[in-house]
Length: 92
Image 1 (cartoon, helix red, strand yellow):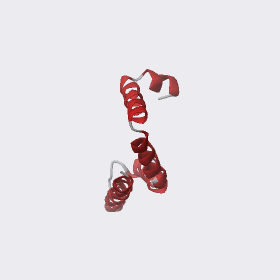
Image 2 (tube, rainbow, N blue to C red):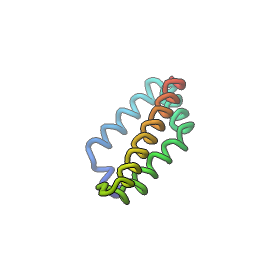
Image 3 (cartoon, rainbow, N blue to C red):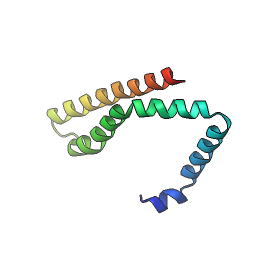
Image 4 (cartoon, rainbow, N blue to C red):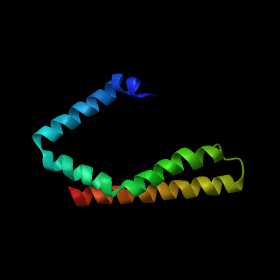
């Protein structure tokens, strides 16, 4: 999906509109969420890299080693998601 397709997507437009409304009505919440996401940058990068680079190489799992890699990736992504949510809770 390129930028032009993303700009025409109704869900992207809705998200951008809601974000704009939240930013106008309560900028402190918007800045807190931005700071939390910025603090979670390494975790978000790790989740994206594991999901996009590692998992496609072993999906669908055909051997025991592939299943171990998929299980470890799921646990790692769960742990990092928990860290991101903790950052969001501290910021808001």
